[in-house]
Length: 411
Image 1 (tube, rainbow, N blue to C red):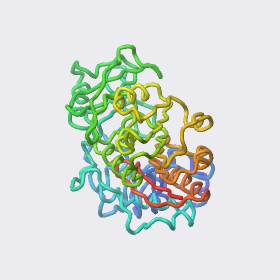
Image 2 (image 1 turned 60 degrees about the vertical axis):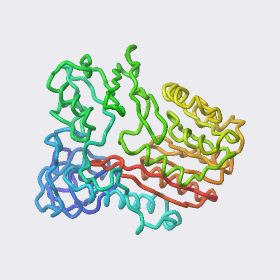
Image 3 (image 1 turned 45 degrees about the vertical axis):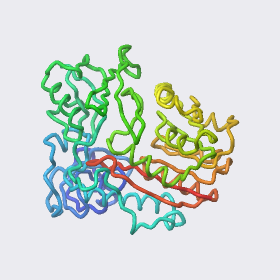
Image 4 (image 1 turned 180 degrees about the vertical axis):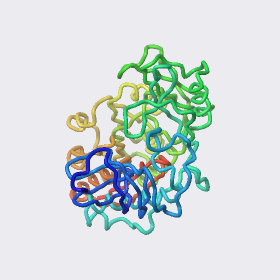
């Protein structure tokens, strides 16, 4: 009986469109069923993983009628019961980008509303490749996080589980990190060694060298001072693995290009960079406004703030504030900004929008990794009198449902 679908039950279902979160949506009796590992229109046998009210979340365990575009996953550790790092290896990258654009449009229509969605040329919007001409979706990731298992080997989480699995390889990593991980998984002594139960973060730098940070809970082991050299345009950063840096090797450059295209910063202007991290956008905003302008960068992470101070010391016009954005906006004496760049956490700007728009910046550029949160923020900004003047989307996380967006709002 479909009205009593319990965890572990199986059903045969034909699924519909791809929705936010990487699932296809289907219906069984009174239940809405979100099915992962399926492509829109496929008929699959699915197993119920969890339930929430009348909603069921399931995994396709057998494809009965496959989409003709379905492909063999390039990684042997992909799929149900295996590594949970990737979700869409069964689809060509070009198809994945189509799904991402459709999910983005759906989010804007549902969460942003018709007034916001109408301000986007959806027929002309595509999810941009980070590496034009390359469609493999592999070898892009410069950062990895894992936990050492009981044998001290790097281990990832199983799909839909907190269980650990030591996989033989990870094809989405850049070559240097992939090679080091494969050696460690074969129990070869090396730089990735860590005591069992410890979390490890690794960052690959320009020269292929790895910076490793071992963590215990939320604390770093004292000897964790390694840094990776990364570069955007004409500027380099020395980044500790624990400080935030975009995982895709091509994304920082792409985001800077998009932000500057929308911002059009000019000499003498004042800009705010909220949730500024290690100062990626502040550096180039500072170059553009010059000695007669100013950039106020606000970041609460002590580690990111230290990285920014080391990397931007040659730009006195960039003023770094180690503070929560909400607190800084409440007590700031900074000049009214010509424009604001904000790269908030996944949840979006939310309540920060009210004090932000009270300062009446002419331009607001949002960098967002969650289409639903971006659509909600867009609705609030449009209701406050702004117009959505531009939107770009980037395939920053191939083989997963994630994407990165940059949106321009003007008043």
